[in-house]
Length: 176
View 1 (spheres, helix red, strand yellow):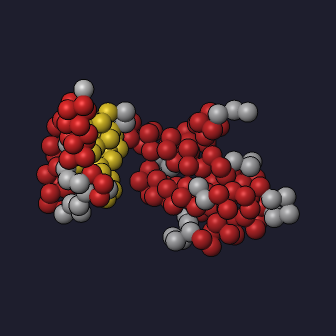
View 2: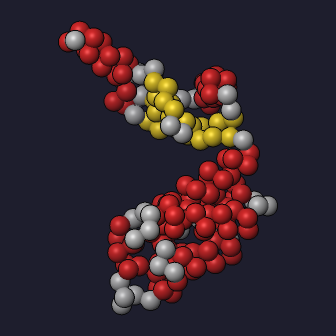
View 3: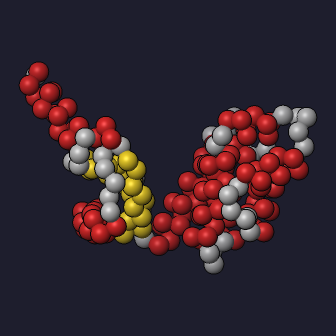
């Protein structure tokens, strides 16, 4: 069986070409559909031969929080017809990579023990962009287990200033 990434690539590339006029809007509905398609029950239902493709489409359409544009509906129908609904999260991921490459940006995942206000986030984003040398699309996630500080992941690079990591480093140094 082919890797999901291999299956998703042509879909992501075709969608990127078709949506070149509104990649941000396309990314928004693609992420929404991806989160629905990530659900194991939805995938199980879609694989059920007793459930028609139209029923699967209507289920996903009804669960979607937003009104889907025509392009989204057509794309979703295509994936359902080709039994590729399970590849949707990977398609969204690869679409984001293409979008970021076009704009010269990267996604940055910031884990923080506490909520970050808008002014602080803008300041942190500016410093991170200088550190990583590119424009970043920052997404913040709360991680109370960090105790304090932040943990930043950009692609395969990690910048960790969390208290949890510092304590683990101290423990390793003391027990060595």
